[in-house]
Amino acid sequence: MKLFSKKHQRATRQVENLPRHVAIILDGNGRWAKRRALPRSAGHKAGAENFRNIATYCKELGIEYLTVYAFSTENWKRPKDEVSTIMQLLEKYLHESIETMARENIRLRFLGDTSVLSPELRALIEKTNAISEGIDGFQANICLNYGGRDEIVRAARAYAEDVQNGAENTLTEETFSRYLYSDGIPDPELMIRTSGEQRLSNFLLWQCAYAEFYFTDVLWPDFDRKESDRALEVYSRRDRRFGGVK
Ligand code: IPE
Ligand code: IPE
Ligand code: MG
Image 1 (cartoon, rainbow, N blue to C red):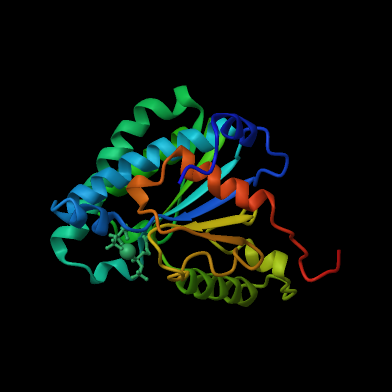
Image 2: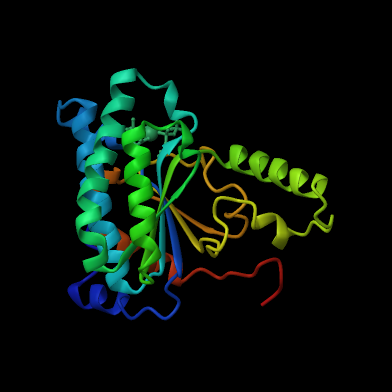
């Protein structure tokens, strides 16, 4: 079913309440491959390619932040060869991004415990971070070895340590959020999950307190510009009350 005409697609570009920050649980790479009788690795490859397309689209639309769940703290449970395929794809993506991000005015930031990743990947992340410092455009956040609970526990530990070292003990939501990986990034207004699953899977637990959720059966590699428009259109019609009355 075709929901949006060309005219409507153009109109979406001018949507007044476009979210500043969109978060995506990009799910369904494996099923996308399975449906085509391809190995799961082909799904991850298509998924990585799609991330590039959707990041470009978000930037074109004027969205300021895109945060994607690339690898969770639980994804280590997957077969070794699948984990290494995902890590290799990340390496390839970062190699290519290092060439293009300054030209395209795209900042990359990594959320998660990257200290356990391979030395090659860590070096690429450092290089990417250094380039990002000189860019103030659209920001893509890649959650890598990220878990929402892990993030909160780490923040609590870091805060306790600071207090032990003499910092003032005046914890507020605002001061606590500075200890999270997402320090300095506004909360996402819109959280999208592809592939039909309707759960958070440990993603941005703190940050999604008031996010609008959008679930679609579309598998991540098929989530194109048209599907993004659809999600943004639904979001634009949501009535956000934040506990108040309108
Ligand atoms: C999401 O796709 C990508 C990662 C979790 C890295 P999946 O690999 O979870 O795909 P499905 O859910 O098995 O189809
Ligand atoms: C969530 O997807 C993690 C990422 C997208 C990186 P999963 O496919 O790992 O989540 P579950 O297992 O279905 O909850
Ligand atoms: Mg999955």
